[in-house]
Amino acid sequence: MTPEMKVHIVCQRWKQDRVLSRFARYLVDRWGWTASRRPDRKADMNYWFAFLEWEHFQDFEQTPTVAYMTHAEDRIKAPEEYRLYYEAARKADLRVCMNEASRQELEALCGLALRFPLPLDKEHFPLKSTVSGDPPLVGFSGKAYRSGRKGADLAERLVRDFGSHCRFEASGKKWPCPTKWYAWKDVPQFFQSLDVFVSTSMVEGGPMPTLEALATGVPVVIAAGVGLHDELPAVEGIYRYEKGNYEDLRRALDRALDGYRQVDRKLLRAATSPHDVDNWCEANRRAFEEFLAMRQ
Image (cartoon, rainbow, N blue to C red; front, side):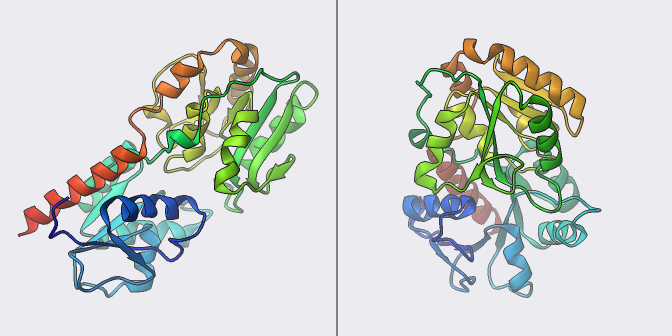
């Protein structure tokens, strides 16, 4: 890292056990960058983590700003969050996205946007080695928000229709099945227990649970057109369905349940390339050095 470059991360809860907080701490730990609840006027760059931090400091102009653009909420169901996403993107000097589709959209609308690999901690998620269950265990993950973007209504229908021949459990909150909140150190335990992971999300930046399941070698059922799902390779054990289409979701889960015992777990783990902590840290450093050099 160039010694002169001082990046400050603005993150209200950067020390907590949260997804984006961990993303920020990887950068603090690797490069010695700073983090706090407020921007630093003496830094070379302030990094809104995530973009919603801009709302608290809309008048801050003392340094270049970067916004980490996680995802845009639904325009109808969450109009205020939708508006803030695009306002923050327009106001930032640089935008960092979680998937390529978002990068292309924001670059066309607002100017330079980058997409970095996600910091998947593969050492934290070893390959599943336990024998598959009978009946199989199907899992969901995340917080099922009121906006409906996690697709909990689809999950509820799956639990009802498939409950006679498989079990369902979830990590997070408010899923229509037995649900437990896992501390970060225990999250691998959840994925190790699964035979199939299902993402019912309608809107995502990643999502990280899809990558975490794949790193564990667990087959996934995922919606096309959501987050980085379309960027994952076509390998056996990744089953896709049309976003929001319940009948197509049912067919995808049927295929997953037919084939979950035969998947190549190493191949599923390989599908997460190039997402890892090292690549995340290097991509941020390299891009910000180049960006600041262009502004001189």
